[in-house]
Image (cartoon, rainbow, N blue to C red; front, top):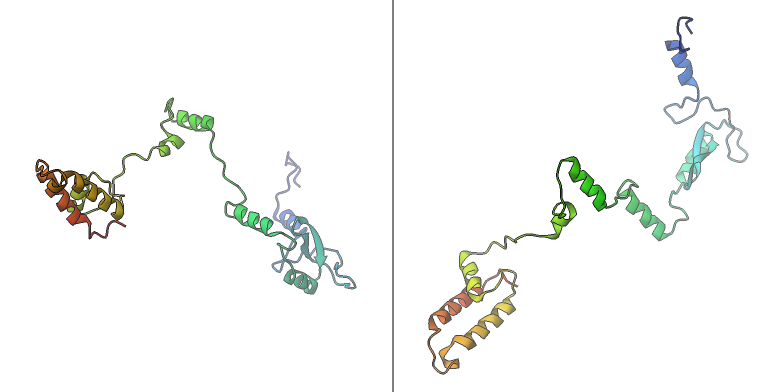
Length: 206
């Protein structure tokens, strides 16, 4: 250490190398500076390899020689003794890196919008915005089938059975034979018949 160093730091390369050598672990995983003896009963080899004692206590270790740490690792089972429920909880937590998500409170959400200079007194933004699906654009149907649905006053989500039921109901109301020969709705009847022809064989309705 230099006398001119007012903070007492020794940043020389030799000092750094000496610090790094303490407790240094080699590429094989061995702690070369360990003075322990292998924890395997009857073994007198140096214990340079550490292994956790329990899946629930991962910071308390056995110290083994190279051969015995291999045997220990081969028989290691992190999930040993866990129930099916505990195992499933582990998988659920692992998918979110053990950091389960939590919903934002309304206060925090409001604070978030406020940081951008946006006031939302009617709660039209954020979570509430997803509660209103808006106007559905509907399915892509041929123009003739869309026109047929308009005539029958039906939606594009209707079923073939509902189309047939509506068609029969309209026929009973409009057909002259069902109304004592009244032909006042004959034009509308022709449209209903045309609409049914467009939809009865369509594959767009279940």
